Length: 82
Image (cartoon, rainbow, N blue to C red; front, side, top):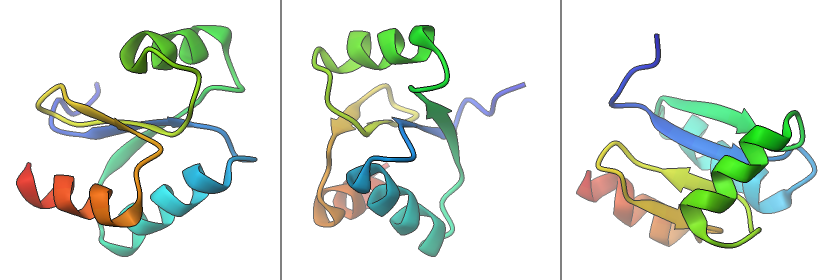
């Protein structure tokens, strides 16, 4: 069962922005669920439906909001706000 408070990150291993966002979350000890958009078309479609564009990472927060390709500063600010 997925924790409803967990952050979800849609991305791909080849994506440098995805790796950077994951590294920030890992360094800060933030729990998140990783969804590899390369592993399934459904995951890629889900990320696109959330963000409205094909860019990754798409970081979805427990409050339903999301960020697309966030800078480290934007991601930290959002984490502090939730």
